[in-house]
Image (cartoon, rainbow, N blue to C red; front, side, top):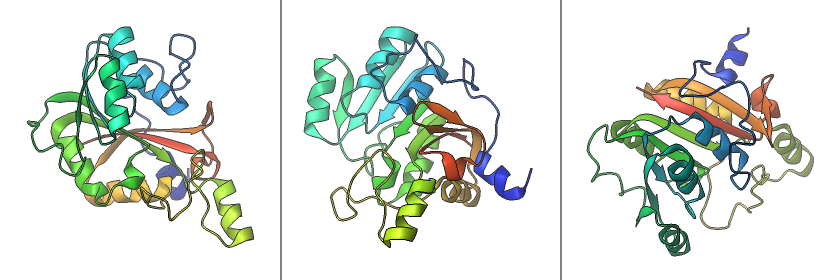
Length: 223
């Protein structure tokens, strides 16, 4: 395997119960996004989890009901917080840049950050805090290295929207542009170990040339 391919793939060791080589199917709620289905499949039953930017709480609710996970969330948007409360979830409203300071070291088995990293002003600080608070950090984000994004920039000369997230560059919240390989480089620079990398194109897992063919990247991280 070439060095560039190795960088794209990350480390292949498993990071929880379940089969890492296949997407979860009928036993996972189909209402969850594909990346959240992978995360849900891999979190062990009975674990403790903190979901950062938890949105409407769909993942936390599934983990509680189906796997007996004790979960908490942090969400900035009022609508998301209200949705979580209606689901009976333990969620606090707050900014992720400040919201983890109150949690002791290793107070959760898993800390989750799904489709949120690209909107943060200080992503490495958040990753450090996730790995302080949790024994494992799980991150998912749209991969701007996807071939359609590259073609969009080449042909149109314009910054492409993130795969599956048709947001203009000037709309709030502002997002950072980065690829799966950029993220792996950042992890290496920051001394963060990649336990496993899973790449998706819609529902399908991508195994070959993932930085080119994957629309979404999911990483399990540790120190």
